[in-house]
Image (cartoon, rainbow over all chains, first blue to last red; front, top):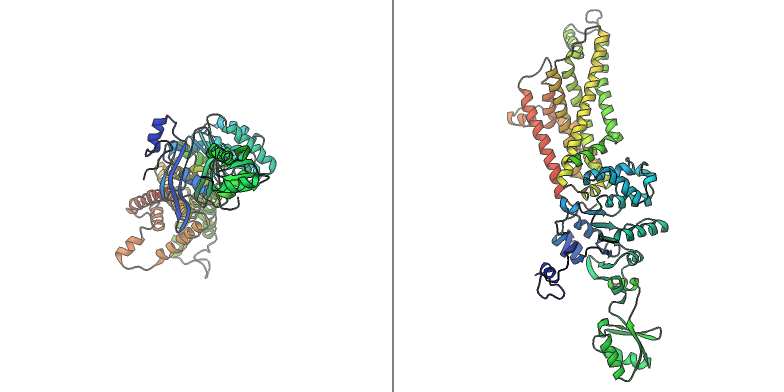
Amino acid sequence: MTPTVRGVPGGTNEQARRLTGDPPPMVEARGLTKRYGDRVAVEELGFSVRRGEVYGLLGPNGSGKTTILRMMLGLVRPTSGVIRVLGLEPGCPAMLARVGALIESPAFYPYLSGRDNLRVMARHARVTGARVDEVLRTVELSARARDRYARYSLGMKQRLGVAAALLKDPELLILDEPTNGLDPRGMADLRDLLRRLGRGERTVLLSSHLLGEIEQICDRVGVISGGRMAAEATVAEMRTRAGLMVRAHPLEEASRIAPRLSGVEDAAVVDGALRLTVDPVRAAEINRKLVSAGLDVLELKPAERSLEAAFFELTGGEGA
Amino acid sequence: MGGDLAAEWLKLRKRASTWVLGTVLFLSVLLFGYVLAYAFVATAPDAGGSPDGTSPAAQPALGEMLQDLLPENMVSNLLAATSGPGKILALVLGVMTVGSEYGWGTLKTILVQRSGRAGIAFGKLLAVGTALVAFVLAAFAAGAVGSCGVALVENVPVRWPGAGELVGGAVATWLILTTWAVLGAFLAALFRGTPIAVGVGLIYALVLEGIVASSPVENGVLKGALGMLPGQSSSSLASSFGPTAQSGGDSQAVLLLTFYVVGFSVATSLLLRARDVDD
């Protein structure tokens, strides 16, 4: 069955794009599934990454994030479903020429220097040697470029991995847990770098199990749980998803009426206000009904919650 | 594929173990092919001088052995010396080139650059083939040094083989080494790493082929089939050079070894293409 696109009932994604004039997504997955024997690593996954955004794949360890990225790069073939990167088959040379990637921990030749490792990658990528020095400067490794990779600290290895991903000056940068193993300073530096890289036309797809990292860097986030897409939204939407905060008087009366209102799934008193689990688009309707019930509505706004709370809610309490 | 070859060549050139293998080949040709062989000939007791001495029948054999060590017979002696330790060293080089990518986890890093998997595979094998040209030169350098040394000690004039024989011998040596290196690369791709591939390769080269070579098989078809194995074909090609060459054996061996090089190369490429890279 062909999936539909919001606002274009019955239409395919491609048809919808033609009608709306939207640019094609940088990454698009539909019904993506990967099984290893009886174990399902990724199941019926669908998502898309738009041009120019910083997209975060957030999920606990073992949730299937790396498998998704490997399928995106053609390292792993899906059992079923479709995935297109830049509209192309994953892993084909035309697609790889426009994509830079760091998958899991960085892996390089221990006997070569950092610079020689990048020279090897540059030759595979058909990139000039001058670009090697540029990316070394970008990740601030020029001073240690002649040291053997085996002598690098974890942070330096990670930066070399990012440098290799940047060699092709890619349109799409895919980074899997890029701050893994870094000290707080290293993490902050790398996040600054990623924010810089994510500005402008470049699209960045980042996977992480660190909520703070996703919150600080990403525009949009897909929450993966058990190989499935639990939710996909902007970070702001994720915080306010399905919730309204209502200050009404008298509060006891409000907490008695609110659960019976249409669309409200749950109501709880939090810090002297009502927190309603409901689609925030119903705010005006809920306001009307509370006022018509004789209540004074002092304040009504989308309920802010931490991304952490949203994450645990979406993943059913799985640890990040 | 030019970029892949250049990348693989850079890796091989800068890797210490490549140089170690080349040096071991040089030294083993010099040691086993010349130093120990000459020591054996030179220290053999005189035939008629002692009751415990070499029998008169052995005299011509010793003379032939000495002749083999002189520069004019360098090619045949080199091929005999190289096809033994040389094939093991080439096998290890092949295993190392592909197997280390699995061990270090670098396969994923190079596969997300730009090349297709077949390009990466053939780039690797071409780089190994190029490195083996240097190995052949090292073996011939050892042969030149060793045979000149024997000629000097024996005080006989240095006469080199003809250019045709030298080139033919170099190509044959390269083909033998390349067959074993590509077999090593195939085993590394098959077992996704170095240790098992080296173990299986050595057991095959040293034990199984040795058993085949010494087995008293009477059945003609089976004997013919066993004679087509890489080790037997290598020996057949090696023995087709020099004064005691078996005529007609070389072209079949060349064809068989070429078939193995192509076959193992394609199989290695197919393994790299067909499998997920998920470790």
